[in-house]
Amino acid sequence: MRKYAYLKEPMKYNKDDQIVKVMLYVAEEGVYLFEYCSLDAIQCSSDRCYDSLEDLYEDWNDLVDERGWIEIEDPLPDCQHDAFIPLRVKGRDVGNPEWGKYETLEDGQWVDYDEHKHTTH
Image (cartoon, rainbow, N blue to C red; front, side, top):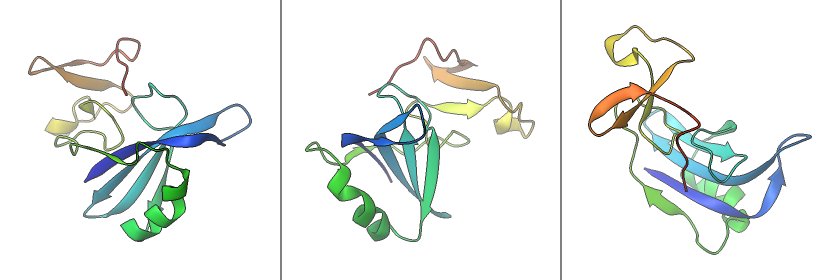
């Protein structure tokens, strides 16, 4: 299960950035919260692990704006859990990952990812 939400107020992340939206992801290996410093970010700036979904909600529900948690589809196999689009490390699907290089699904084909071409929610 994945859900994202916008924060009522930006939250300080570091000296220059603020968290403006978050995504939760419940996987077999745990419960994750991804933090985004831009409304159109495709991938997160940081992440946190939680022992349970209830713990995550306890920390974040009061910070989420009136739209609440918005459910989205789980990532495709081999894709990044935090990405709002189908995005995977190039070669990961064949056991030969090229770390730092990504590809995305467009019109049923995996193509090199151009971060300047994509925006999100």
